[in-house]
Image (cartoon, rainbow, N blue to C red; front, side, top):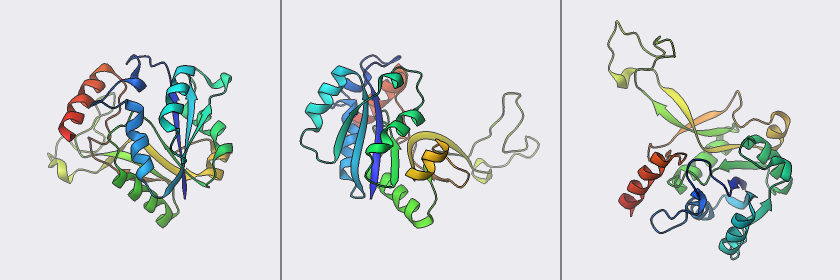
Amino acid sequence: MVTAIIGLKEISQRVPNKNFKLLNQKPLFSWVLDTLLEVEEISQILLNVDGKELLSKLNDFTRNFKKIQIIERERNLSGHNTPMTKIINSTLQFAENDTILNTHVTNPFLTKTSITKGIKLFFKNGKPVFSANELQSRLYDKNIKPINHNPEILQQTQDLEIIYEENSCFYIFDKKKFSKKNIRIFDNSVAYPISSIESVDIDTPEDWELAVVIAKGLK
């Protein structure tokens, strides 16, 4: 079985009141939670929460869900500059399972299917898994040097080398291995590609507007 860990902040820097905002008549924080609750392999969901008002609202929302446990964030980890790895590390003591899945409420369109397949891939290969965007386009570095193609040989994009972009939608790893290195992607990690809609991450006002359009389309 798997323990899911999510970090939530009450104050959002670029999208005010982001976690409470209604996306298609449903608060943003509930989208991923509803999806995780449907995944049979996940037996525990730990919410590491920064903010009294958010704590209160989440308590009301999760009261009837035995899978969900709310943890108030330690004061020394509060604020916008704390990396997620430190929040995960402080939450691991409450995890009932050795397998951890870390995701975020800012990925509302992540599906049960992708999460389930990612978990099964982890158990099948015994290797950490992370979600990724699969890129097959002509890419350049900051010096405009081609990364995955030769400009003198114009290949079709579908024939280019695939490059993976970490999209932060989910990470699956072993609790003990994480505790040793405090990283979510390891040397033997496996990339699990997900669709561009699933990988939408709400970080800016423009991201929110895009999510509103997608949510209406999905409905």
